[in-house]
Amino acid sequence: MATLEIKNLHVSVETDQGKKQILRGVDLTINSGETHAVMGPNGSGKSTLAYSIAGHPKYEVTDGEILLDGEDVLAMSVDERARAGLFLAMQYPVEVPGVSVSNFLRTAKTAIDGEAPKLREWVGDLKKAMNDLRMDSDFTERNVNEGFSGGEKKRHEILQMELLKPKMAILDETDSGLDVDALKVVSEGVNRAKTNTGLGLLLITHYTRILRYIEPDFVHVFVAGKVAEQGGPELAERLEAEGYDRYLKADA
Amino acid sequence: MAQHGIEEHSHGLVPLQTRSERPRSTTIGDFAEISNRQEIWRYLPLDQLNGLADEVMAEVVEQEISSQLAQGVTATWVNTTEDFVGSAGLPEDRISAISWTNASKTLLIDVPANTEISDPSFLTARLANSDAKALHVFVHVGANAKATIVLDHVGLGVLAENVEILLDQGAKLDFVTIQDWAKGSSHVSTQFARLGRDSFLKHVVVSLGGDLVRITPSVALDSPGAEIQMFGVYLADSGNYFEHRPYVDHIAANCISNVAYKGALQGAGAHTVWVGDVLIRQTAIGTNSYELNRNLLLTDGARADSVPNLEIETGKIEGAGHASASGRFDDEQLFYLMARGIGDSEAKKLVVRGFLNEVVQKIGIAEVEQRLIKTIEQELEKVGA
Image 1 (tube, rainbow over the protein chains, first blue to last red):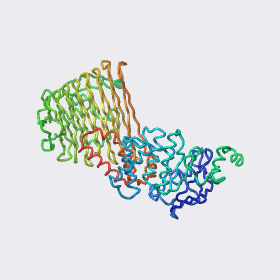
Image 2 (cartoon, rainbow over the protein chains, first blue to last red):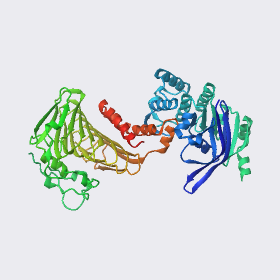
Image 3 (cartoon, one colour):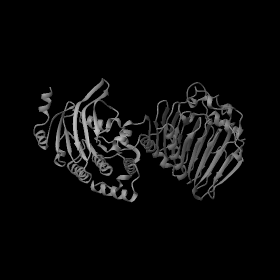
Image 4 (cartoon, chains in turn cyan, yellow):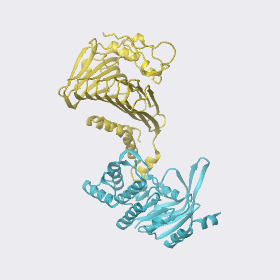
């Protein structure tokens, strides 16, 4: 049983116009096995939350805490956070030229586990996970994210999540740019990981579409860097019908 | 000593308008004294020449070159006055002419016609002291023969070198020149290749060490159907100055050239220069040509100059292109790898190895590739990257 606690989180970024405050006091607690959807209009700070948890250097935490099972996540480097059990599936996965998927995955698995995986087991796990995500076997010979289609990039992110087995995964707009078939495949992968490892999920999305395939236990509506409203799955349905206008007007 | 006069010469203060107008001669006096005001010496740290610009110097002797030759390949020392010396190319600059004049002997590496040799042959230059020395190497591959030759430079040395590579019709050669000098070394190497009809040359430059290393490989594609693949990999640290100036001269029809150099730089004062010249003459119809240089700057204080030049005198070609870029470590790449639990130093290694991999993989000689990968690891450890 793991718990990720976000308390009173304030985050700003450096822009050409100077420092800009993006998160203004976010409180969120995620337990193993729970799925939390964070929804909100563009610019509300959803991705900032994701990157701040993962430790991207661009984002400066000015106040508040992030704790994983009571451990201070903010004191950890990016790789330490990953090894502690946090995983961020990125909205825009980065190309790493000359590094094959196979080499990358093995290096990551070794880093997370603290020892190299047993070869035969690893090959089997990899093959199965790729098969489940309907990825061609020659995929591992390609360079990381180089020339990948939008769908391939997202499958590759979920593949990593399935193999690295984090305690908590943040999925940053994993649904964006996916057609219905790809969305189904990716969602199945997420649900499978949840069933197999009981991980906690923070699902960041603009649209309710993905929530038809991955059912959230809690829905949080983000507006202007704060949680404006929270509830159960019914809140997502209401957003589907009404959109975000209600919050934006209230905010203005 | 064979003396060759100037073939083409342009006088006066007007800068040369085309690459082919550079004078060619083995006579030192035909070339002006070296100065940073001449384009070809523009970047060179003249205080690091350590005697390479002196008109008189010693020459490399037999004991300073060790060899491990594959069956069928021979290495013999001959007089530089032999007629064939100069048949692959003639000096286009003063240091090359100095080296030519001072090397009374030429190391001839010969691969007889119609012999296919798959094992690589290694020649290693390890000079006895740090006096400036001249060396002339001539590599000849007979018709339809196939070979792999590695010319390695290690230890402390100051060397002015000419390397000629002559491929007869249908010959195929993989040639690698490695500069892995110790600190305090200076090396200027002019390499000339002439390719026979339908022959193939893979020319690989690997520069890893030396205070001043300047390699100028040029190829004359004056027989139809010839192909050259030129690759370069370099890793420059503080105190390294590496200059590479590949030149491809497309003269005959239907030849192919591809040039790709990639380098990583780290540490204050690390400096690399890449000037890539491709000339496609009016007669070179059906040419297909591409040149590329990329540099990865790992730390502040390193400098990479990159200048691709493409001259095209005919429109009847298959293709011609060039690309050049120098950039910093990509923080987003590092973040991505680290977000998967990979430590900072391991992530940087992955990125650098990946960056250089495209060219390293092209070398095709396991010993050389492994040595290169090991050096990359060691270099990255040094800065605690």
